[in-house]
Image 1 (cartoon, rainbow, N blue to C red):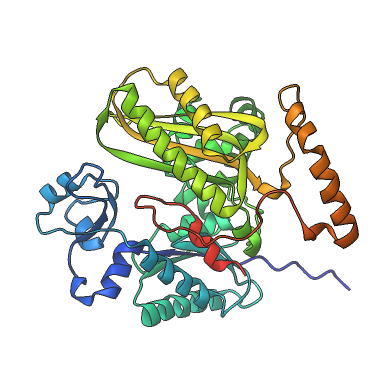
Image 2 (image 1 turned 180 degrees about the horizontal axis):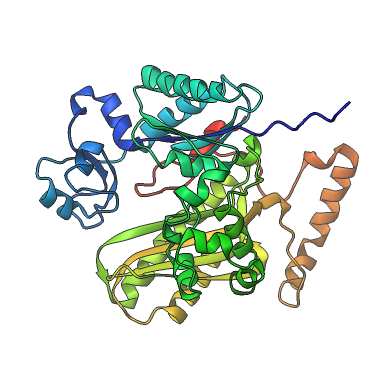
Length: 416
């Protein structure tokens, strides 16, 4: 008997349209059909738009635009402060709907996620299922969405961006040369400004150039990421839809857009201190520690730069994060006016998994702890390892108070 041909995967990428603005319009129907935007404090320049409705976009308003400029373009624009608790509740409701179809649901941000429907549908049925999901989210939650249908996650993500609002798009690998290859590399999902600049310097200007470039050439100039980007440009992506990815926090960070450009070191340091404090609190809430500290600086001309430093010992205390962040900033900031600052701790692990390496500097501290360690080991041997452990283990309630955070703290709602 001939071997049965393996069934191709069918992946949906669900992307909510103008999510924060749509949630506000669903909460207050009088806002429907009006130009609205979600922003920070409109009295300060930090009032940069987080998102805006399609009615506002029709007037030339867009996400990341400064409030004053948005009001100039659209005087009737209605500005609303962000309500992250409201958005979190709406997000959970969306993913609860998706999980009524299959357990293979992977949230990737508060307003988007993947669902593997391979075992649910075939061919044309996929479009009918997507229409059903889209209508259900609209009817039950009053929220519009776009859905991309494809054989892998990259293509599904790309497809969902192709028709908004309320779009459903099918994208097949064989269609890439005609649909994507003529576009600039910056248009490809997964390519940011920095990578696009590097590719352009290598004379790789379009997605087609990237797809046809030598893998050896790309690896020598961009490392493993070069080969991965070439695969994506050719529609190759073997990542599975992983419901357990919600447990894999990779980084914790905070950034802030400043009311006025900073040029004095004392002000820059004060801002970094506040960012490090917030990062440390979030690490504590998640019981995490990280090996890498990064800083982000955006100057008055919107030029972005970032620097990082990696250590063998994972850290989580504010004092440690601050020391590294300050050192990186002193070395790489040259006095240009600063518009945005950010601090991130990445390569994170569960704090109870941290194992500090002995060195000449911390040997004395370990020596002091040795009697305590022996007692702990005796208790664990008698009653089990879970009876006592170093550090705190309780699960803390996530904090949604950040006014400008685009973090993935909402993923806590999806964990058992």
